[in-house]
Image (cartoon, rainbow, N blue to C red; front, side, top):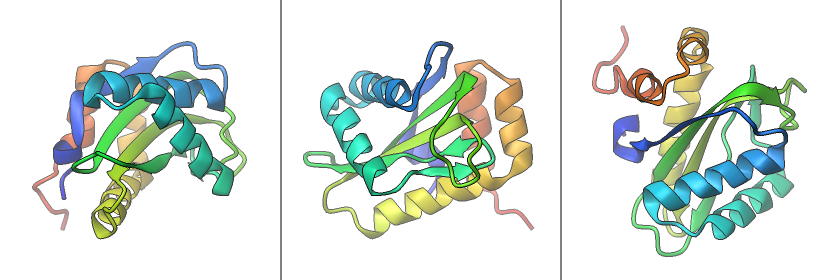
Length: 154
């Protein structure tokens, strides 16, 4: 599974004014609505419900919020780079500035997990995160996230 199959260029955004975790989740709702025609409020509620089970801040300034939705045909993603980090209850207690949300069909078991693993591996690479943080342009961010999808590292 390649990130280019789950992430649309129009689902990548740089956000200047998200002052809290709640506001970031609302940004993801807006992004999911505009890029994938999902209901923004439903997305926010589903992501918040998942966060209530346990925070999805994975450390090193990265969060991977995710949820399942009725009526979605395949896994979709959205990426937000924050100009100012926000507290996300991450495992390392550090604020996050990189967030990649996944929206999965209600019945997508293994597909959802594969997408989550792919995104997690990509954003665990400090060089990738450094490139993302240094390039606050949505088109460039999309390219960084999807480059090397079809090339396996040695």
